[in-house]
Length: 225
Image (cartoon, rainbow, N blue to C red; front, side, top):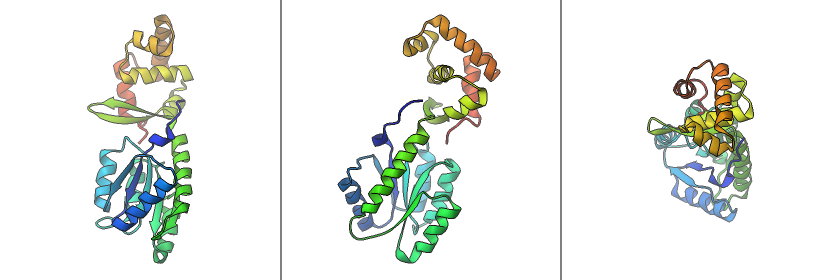
């Protein structure tokens, strides 16, 4: 299982108020959170971004009241793309009841009341969200396929086909397009050992070659998002 760089996990902020965006930027900076920050200013822009960039899952910070598509619907759409995605809902005092409903119904991670001042509670919520997201992403693997990036849930692959940890490493190499020698060099094993792993993997996955194996993973329920 690979270690995820927590600082590389992107934060996706969906907020239509320039002043609130500035408060959140300032709060994150003061809290020492320097993760990549993407911003959408309405719900439709957010949904479009999620569909285009779904292979880069991170943490969502969502205003409940957004133009075009509201935050609850954006969260619902995000959960359709990635059921495990982590969202922090932002709300005014008057919308607190709606925020609590989103926690219960749509599975938001946390909710915070907006403020014109810095949001120290946002820092703690974001840190916890990043920590949880990092743990989720340890079992996922991003590969290039058909000109775009695809996220594979390697834990699901391992459990479905009863693969060993080393066999999972070999499958990752196959998804990269590595030849046997490249797999051997990358994993510090012999090519003969690679061939032995491939034989077992093919048997477990009921395939006869690497092309079919990769196709089976990329077109099946193994996609992580």
